[in-house]
Amino acid sequence: MPGLAWREADRAESVLCRITCESAAVRVALRRTGNGTRLGLRAERSGEEVLLDATVLEALCHLTPHRAAELVRERTERPDPREAV
Image (cartoon, rainbow, N blue to C red; front, top):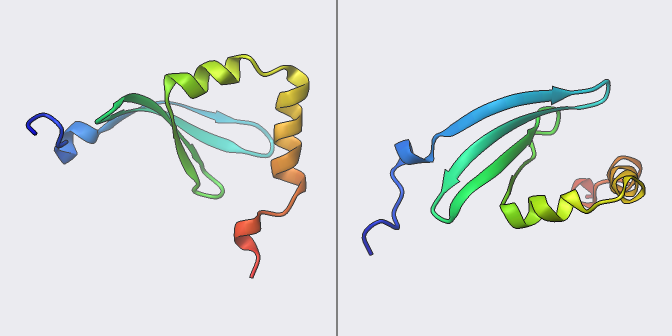
């Protein structure tokens, strides 16, 4: 179907900013996909990337400070199961 295939040039991302603190650095970019615009996040230390759509971003807006802290603690205090041998 015409219009569904994306040329590589159409997938270009627009880097918006780099957010850092004493323990992390993340690159934030807009990325156009076949399903719309996504917010792309890339952790500089690990190289992990994620694309977030508006539904996910809206859900994040509803996090309480306590729940946000729990998510951070879960990721920083527990070993990553992907690193297990």
